[in-house]
Length: 239
Image 1 (cartoon, helix red, strand yellow):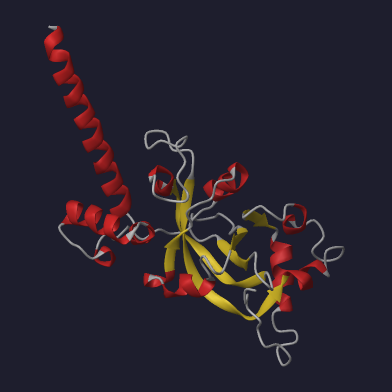
Image 2 (image 1 turned 30 degrees about the horizontal axis):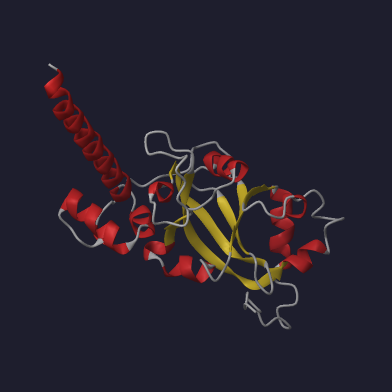
């Protein structure tokens, strides 16, 4: 009768905790990039529990994903503060691949959810001395729950995004190349009323993930070789 209710409740809670932990293990080990996004101790604990292997780089070999046949490649611009995560940091990741966690804007999240493997990315350095486009990347894994929202110790923690109904998602991105020169926001703005008219970057400057029209990408990449002999890529040296 009623005396057994506490025991049943405790058992139910234990079952929920075990199920939740298993879900995190499966999520972490399904992608090396996802495991790398975790705090090192947590990543090692999850992967060791799931596989018996302590090195996160040796587990989570995902099936090779390919772009959907017949679908045109889409372009997006993704922003990151270089003192937090720069294109050099992405390049230094295992296989040049990392997860794009921490997006907490609904429109930016929706754009990420629309991304497909193989879509191309303009990697933009923001909130620095010379903001602008630093290089190119591509989508390596489509949107999946951003587990940093579940971690109370993470700066991206969101109690309104529970594990059983995640509000936030992330993608894995793969380094492609640095631009031959840094194309600054100032230079881009000089074409605001011309070839880059209507580019979302100028209308929604705080949006960290945004689609880019192919004609705008073509024009921007056409700027890359211009002035190379004079350019000494300033990067994003912080004040």
